[in-house]
Image (tube, rainbow, N blue to C red; front, side, top):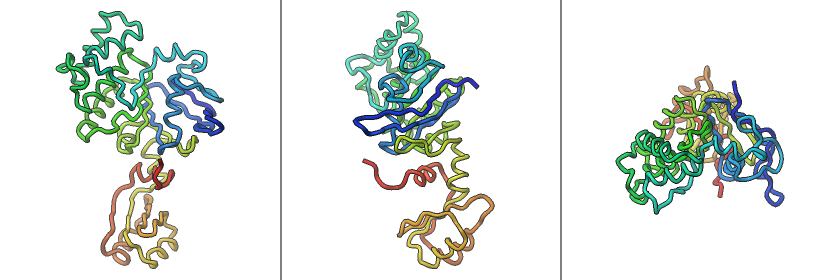
Length: 303
């Protein structure tokens, strides 16, 4: 498969601090790829290097087979970026925000109007084309930012937490549009704090922390490998249960007032635990990518 993005031992250093520390991964053409990690893991710094905003300190970063340091202008013309922050121009209408942005790519006015109309229809914003962006709901504004990132018909779309702050309905609307884009074969790189979003959209992903890759794989393969098939959560576990868990070699996290058990395929301790150790305050559920994320990056707050 053709590599759209190739990152090898990428380093970004600020005043002696390595925000990105020999990060390596690749993204293939047509792949929906996730870059996950807690706050301070180096995601935003990596993203900014990918679209040429920050120069790498060391390592190799190639997009479309070109080096970002030498060919960042050509790379930018083939890349779309949906920023986390709302960077729409409040003095312009919805349509004007797209037309002005099209001018940055030297798109002829007639073609810019045609592309704008297509994108407004795709993102269900045609009825708001003449409205000022300040009149838009949060979900509409996010869809407009997405539309703007596609005005140059990019070969690589970079999404930096595209649904942060949206209500569930708006988030699902954005997901549906992203799935439609995925079906066209567009290559997408996504950062997100929503594990459900990553599970639903990503073909493959990496989880990074302290500037390094911790794991890489498809969402389901990572769940199977690091969280098992099922999760059992027990509030207020007694010593007898803890002894049983250790004696049977059950993967677990002991949080003092709560015990989290990771039960892999082919092992079933549910009945024993249910009958002997946990008459109440027990939760039985399937494992998720969030369980993997918390196991690997910890549960403490990151400021």
